[in-house]
Amino acid sequence: MKDLLVGTLLVMTALFAFQSCQNDSEAISSDAVPLEVISQLEEMGFNPDGIEVVQEGYRIERDIIVTHDFLKGDHDHDHSGKGKNTKQYSTNALVSTGGSRTITVYMPAASTGRGKKTSGFNANYIAALDEAISRFNAEGLELSFQRTASSNADIVFTTLSKRDERRGVLGSAGFPSNGNPYDEIKMNTQIDSRFGYSTNAIATVIAHEMGHCIGFRHTDYFDRSLSCGGQPSNEGPAEPIGANHIPGTPTGFSAESWMLACSGGGDRPFNNDDKTALDFLY
Image (cartoon, rainbow, N blue to C red; front, side):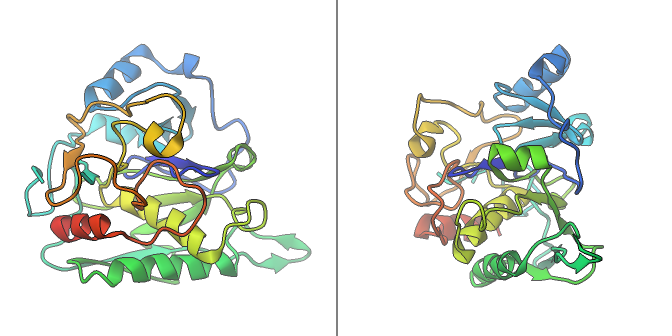
């Protein structure tokens, strides 16, 4: 459950939901968030600073969506079959693979009809999604991804609201639930035209949000300033949602990790620590 700001990869990795054609009033002041919700988010292991009300529920950490259903559920479970006490960091809730599982992904293509452009993504985004998928599938995991032409997919891409696009949000997503990946990823449709990202840089943003969908927290969740700059900022305590250190990865800063909270907008394929983390979990 996370959003990406320009130059920033924000996790929204399994608690997010998104829909196309959202209106500009989607985000509301944190003053409208009930105190009991703020307390619940803190108990779940999130830092509610800067929380916003959105259509799906609440947005925290800039790119993570926490849905109303997620707040109602019990998420202190590991569905990977490999044990949750696994510094790359994962949530307690992972995707159940059963030894082998293919996750289908749908990204609608933009088209023009009667002088109007439909809501969707241009060829750069389609190519970037294919690149992101190839990065995961090249690792030989128990979990693989496949792009499909059917909107009845495990993960569906939709466009961010115009308001969020103007604010520079790049993308957002959520965390797994009940052994399934988070089912939606919202993306800014102007990452290439407005911000000048290459196809591979867009692939990095997409792969980051896909990482949230399968249970990865930000690599530097404990201090976002390591990749974002500014004052030290912890995204929240580890439990009960989980920020489990993955064996074989650094407990400190992992430079160029695809799951760092912020990015300079370049291409970041999986580094060795990322590959170790993916292989351990899946």
